[in-house]
Image (cartoon, rainbow, N blue to C red; front, side, top):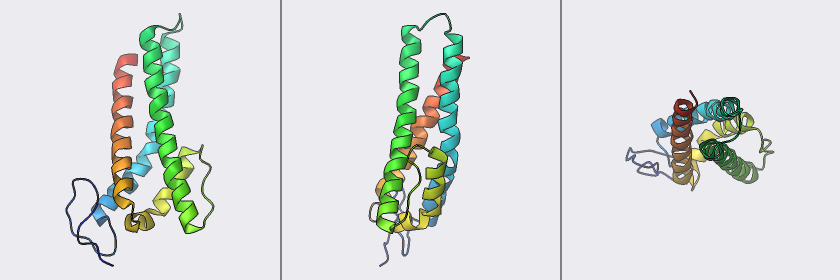
Length: 146
């Protein structure tokens, strides 16, 4: 069944056989490739922050640490949810939900299947928001740590 328009947020390109157009699917695959680096960047920021604040935790350091921890947890939980859905519906064994890189590899491998899935628009929206949020937190936090 053809879907006349891409279901990704802000996209109106025509598509056939998928709910996402090829450009949006490719952008999501690129986003998935970038998420492990952002996840590790958050971890590095936490380590740097603890070194800078070695004399004791300040309220700003605690708030910063909590925001970075939240961003990491949200990234991991989002990937785990989409990996679990994909594995269950495809009858496959999914990746370890604590391994961000393994989940992104698994989701990239299944990108065409996800692009045709009834929840493809939701997948696109969540990954786009996730990448923007973690990337923004990562760059903002680097400025505060330096």
